[in-house]
Length: 521
Image (cartoon, rainbow, N blue to C red; front, side, top):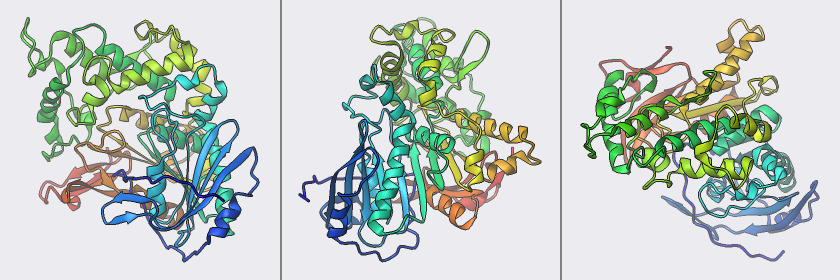
């Protein structure tokens, strides 16, 4: 087949490690890769199958200059689900991994493919059935296209997974021994959809900061935070005021766990009164908040309720506001109408639900939310607590969520875990928590931002923990984590399986994980 490909430069995102495992000395040839081009798959056209020699694609990772040899397969499944499968020519670890997307998707995750390939995985990624324009959270592709909305919401990843597994089996002459999924944010929503709708696709799912309650999240977070910030000209919080808010919260709540490290261990214990930052009447300085700004911040922490008192979606929690990837990026933006919450909420409800005449300030949470839930909720919302099929086949679900996430409230992941726990209890489990944790574990990560970054210990290898759980039956109670700045390890912490929380022992080295214990609330 004709060889034509571009050179890509990639970097690996910190926070989710990759485990090589026991790599086998596979040695597949260019001819075996070319043969994949003739493989017949349902409703799918393989557009290219090319063998790429070692070093032809560069990987921007310290200590590694280029990718190993691999077979690259590009394909499209009807109506327009593009996907790629990358398979190492040698030293395949006998595992397949499917990769999730971010935001409104629309692109294949080449960074994830490169990272997985370099660690010995056969990997696949899809654009979910549409192509991104490059604009933040562009949803224009969804207008009048229910089919593409369903592909984006759940179908595309499932279809990609089925076909990618077949391609992997054809290339190596046998199926992968284990199939794993990994994704964060939108990728977290995709992972929860897999667990709920397609529990047979993966043996283990690593899900980060999931946007699984999609429609309510876009209303009660993206849209509500924008409404709070843009209620009038005085409500918007300029980014130069964000450090004032963050510093005041840290000053009061950082040391609640006995350690002052710039991280609030459990923000639910932080009872901060935003009004203490109020400017004197008639003044507006960077070291204080005006009355409208105080009200806007309070709305964001509280979340929005419907007339019945029902909370639409949890508000943000204190901690990490001043991090570069925190409030100034997601909540306030560099100027009004430039935050990521604004782009996401306005675009979604305009293009997915209401059309070009949508005006975000007119959104009625009692009337309009029901319209949205009825129209697109079934395609997008992964909120079913019934995970029996996943549990019965022995698959494992490992979820993590950063406490300093300025996009998706970390309380939402706790709420979903509790809903599964309640379902298990209603089914008659003697010990509902133990029964739930047999197949589903949640790790809350102090100081982790939205999928990566933040002031906490954001460097941890959850993938290896998942693989040990699936392949060896060793369930993770603790995942080691560390904060790394440059080449320096600043401190280490244990991540505890919810509902346990890490507590300082009061005497040990405050930078060492061994000085902390996981204790139940």
